[in-house]
Picture 1 (tube, rainbow, N blue to C red):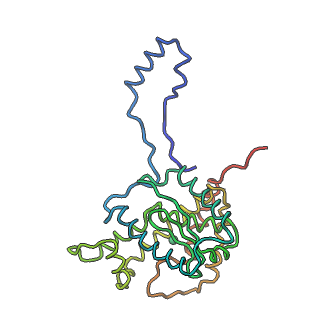
Picture 2 (picture 1 turned 90 degrees about the horizontal axis):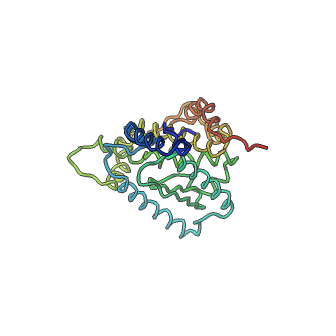
Length: 276
Ligand SMILES: [Zn+2]
């Protein structure tokens, strides 16, 4: 577990003492005791961001509705082959995310949506909706790899990467023009220079989602080494020199190298095997 602990006076000591002494001691402790400590959350409400979480979530919901409508019209909404498995794994990961208080804001409404569209792999929306393509899930060799994909996407929502990236983009544009979240998406669609300037922030978001995803899936019981299956495959297929006009993701090799360095820590998050 990576949750921070706190120091507390043990309350079960008091009833074993004579009532008067216990009362005096309790009064003294009440005077001396510092204000109650709050465990510091791992992820907290960021300050200085350009829009509220609600505004960013609302824009994300619009994009989701478009996707759902497309899947519905194509008769490809919902799972067919991995329903039980995906639901079970997602529930495990959500339990871990909630147990570790990884989001201290209004709370994410975790939802898993499966579509059978060949061009959809996996992504997450700021409000906690995780979307995965069943065809893509078919291609992932092991449950651990699938767990990593889901946990990586959940980490993007937990860490509010969309809101951070949008705010960064906002700083790169003329400030006297007010812009909504939708305006920003429109700008990014046509302004390739803007997206290119965002690369460091986008890459940093991917590294963070990788790291938190690995730890989250490990704490749900998925072997960290086996989680890396997809990235190992991508790194093996990746050309030595990739030249793209814009890269929203770092190279698979670099992501893999960073995650391999985290394996000892991730292994220690795994639950202990059940006793005899
Ligand atoms: Zn990602």
